[in-house]
Picture (cartoon, rainbow, N blue to C red):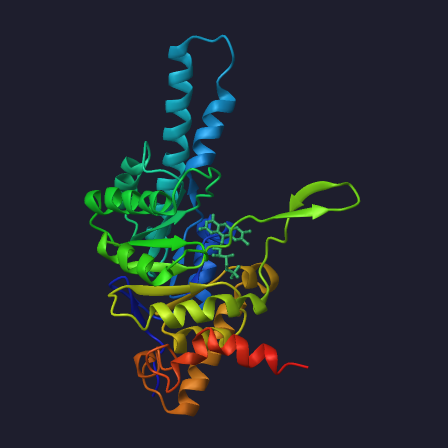
Length: 325
Ligand SMILES: Cc1cc2nc3c(=O)[nH]c(=O)nc-3n(C[C@H](O)[C@H](O)[C@H](O)COP(=O)(O)O)c2cc1C
């Protein structure tokens, strides 16, 4: 008899399928729906560092007393945080599955104390989504990367709950970066965040937001890196997110070495029932293949475990593209 239960960040999950951070995880009712559909855990909608700061600024009126501005900023911060803490407390009371809080940030200053409150409110873990776009050509890539490590250091010093780091896809050496994330104390890595991307409208000649929801073909950008990172000797749990719509998609990420997968766009397109369908498909596939646990096949197709690791590498580019007619 197969079981799809797994362990992620030291937490026991009934399923490797997590409802990823989005508006679908910002209310207790929908978190309950996620649990009822069979989600192994939920990642709450992020509390945004920018959101808090910009809201505070928009409330401060020109010419007012500095004390009033300070008060407004304090008020906005504590209220945004209080609403979020209340969501964590309510969610923990209402569901049995782990509730992972999420913070979207770009610096280590002024907010990491909030994380302590998040822990006190009962979050099972913290997912930190570092969304930092370098815009200064004078900044070296190592300086940009050090920012991630300072954030992780600051959090892991303060928290007892596990910290997992959601990152973007593009780093010069992702394997080293993942290793350093682990060395700085993170227990997990979430691959990958879906950043806001600009698009152009050629009629109005304006910059407009690109499609928010993902497409299943985007998985291929993630599969290689999950397969490469999981093959390293790095004690870090990988949660794969991008383009999971079906059981087949989830199984591919598990075969690449992910411990869990997160679904988000699929929830927008098809609702929570997609989680039940994915669970069922994983289960059926495991029975067909006679796997008892996810660990029986997790990472089976990663960079270390396949006969020809070059399939992940540059040489494939030459072979593939030169023979394509
Ligand atoms: C509408 C929407 C809202 C999202 N909000 C958040 C968020 O608050 N925090 C976060 O870390 N990721 C957020 N994400 C990213 C998702 O959690 C997920 O990582 C990403 O969309 C890739 O997964 P998918 O292909 O299943 O959508 C959001 C995505 C969408 C589409």
